[in-house]
Amino acid sequence: MSIANGLSNEDLPNSPHARQLRAGFPWLTFGGELEAEFRRTNFDENLLHTRVNLCLAILIVIAFSAMDAMVLGPQLDLIPSRIYILAIIPLLLIGLASSFSPQRHRIHAPLTMVTMTLFGLSVATIQIIASLGGISMLTPSLILSIVFIYFMSGLIFYHAVAANVIVADDDAEARRLFTSVQQAFTNVQRGRRGQLPPPIDDIEAYWTPEEKHRVSSMLRRSFVGSPETVRSGLEDFVAETGADELIIASAIHDHAARLRSYELLAS
Image (tube, rainbow, N blue to C red; front, side):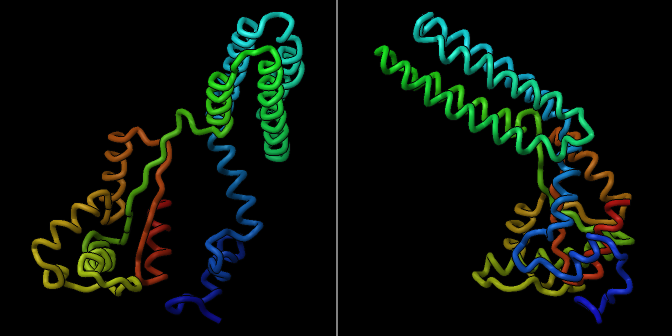
């Protein structure tokens, strides 16, 4: 039995990645086993950011707790302060401590959901208490919610950029494979959309100078060539953008060549 372009199943190891390749992506999602591996790896790679964000979230909750105390006064602030001190801050501290646990992959996600739920309920409670006292807390509550969710989502201090990458054994072959993308973008310029076309030997004969200029401008963040050529280009790209993560797109017509490109890129 074979998959696209004659690559036999025997050529693929018995791993979650190989099984996913055999099954394909009918719903543009990973299978359960590979999805779990992806989540574990992604969590570990971003562990430092998660810990920094949790520390910042604790500081922000403390700051807004102090602000609520000043705005609401000692009588109205009795319940909100207890929510902050006895629920939200301890849960954040537990979340920070759990990030150092070997079981963090199981603990962190449900703990985050509980913390977020309690935080949402606390914001609603503070709004009700403030309204009973004739005080508007809408603006600071919204600011607190937005900032808190931003930190808990692990987005701050993390920069991911995308690029087209095609790697082959030599520059000439990589440039030939890249003509599939160049043709596809040229076809869009001509109002013709369709499947990714096979590569051609002479792209200059395919597009006009005007089309070349427009397509090359759209594909300027493309790194095509041998492993050495692509490595140098990507290193400069990362230095220029300060990226923490690269999102790689490799639109190659031939399935075996696409797998080879990823193999060379990974090496």
